[in-house]
Image 1 (cartoon, rainbow, N blue to C red):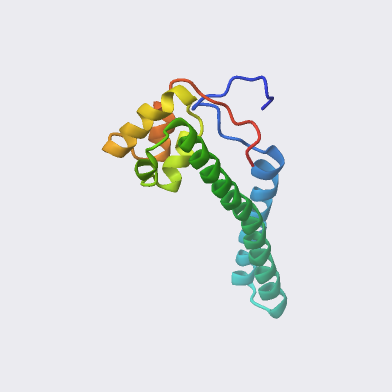
Image 2: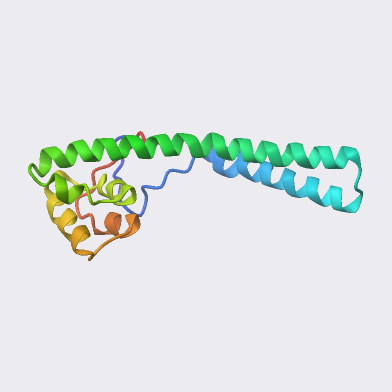
Length: 145
């Protein structure tokens, strides 16, 4: 997605074609084929091939999962700093927000944040998805992992 495109709830998910449509399916198919081959004709070679296929799939999954965890921590920090700026004196309020709620708030324009925080704290909206769907003025994030 280019930096000048309009981002909203419907199109904000990022699909990296080489990752989502090539590497992941190939690794999944490889693991399945290796396990089927092992089941049909167990041997030391098919066992080893299955273990390597599964280890490779797990390693690649972890290589994707770990940066996403780091990104979530950075978003939490950014949003905490943003809330301190936008809602001075309400630290005890936004300290109650979960990581997912903070991540959901990242797409809201500054003017919307106080009202959204009130809605979250009242329990009207709670999930990351609900918060993102409630955003009226989307603040795009074109550089997320």
